[in-house]
Amino acid sequence: YITDVQLWQGEAIDFNLDKFRQHIKFNNLALSHLDAFKLDFSNATESWLAKPKLRELPKRFVINRSVRYHGNYVEWVRILRAIAKDSIFVGLPKEHEIFEYTFEMKVQYYPTPEITDVLETIASCEKVFCNHSFPQALAEGLAHPLHCETFRPYPGAIFKNKQTSTYF
Image 1 (cartoon, rainbow, N blue to C red):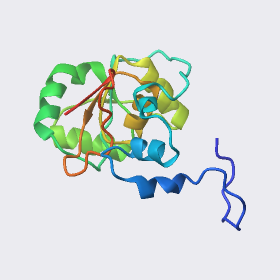
Image 2 (image 1 turned 45 degrees about the horizontal axis):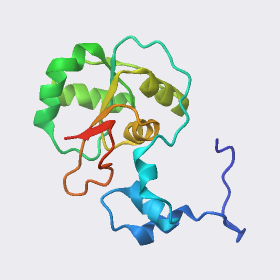
Image 3 (image 1 turned 60 degrees about the vertical axis):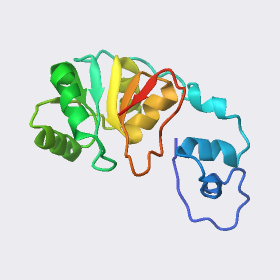
Image 4 (image 1 turned 120 degrees about the vertical axis):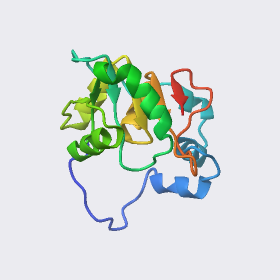
């Protein structure tokens, strides 16, 4: 965990994570990071996060939709008709409010005040439905079943050939 942040004073840098910006030639930021450090792209299709402890959830599915990167309202409506009653929403309270307003459908809000809460919730559900967002990154990192709304002008988080992920 990050326990302290300070201004850089010229100390040696072991891994410059900003280096990926010189490698943005893929429609996937993870591949840009792998390319920057000359790592095998197959790493992107496997789990790269340790499985957390699991928790009992009140519903089978997890939904998250941030206020950025929207691309397919119609597919959300179709999905929600099938899963809304068996889903919980993780994210900021305002994201939840906007989600329910946008789709005129109630989904139970599930507070996740810490990053580990989001991770454990995602690992414990049957499938995640989201857009390009932090919960998507966690699901991809866990190689957890995921159905993700893409941002069509720049689909920067699609993992081709990943067995656990589908995109709309």
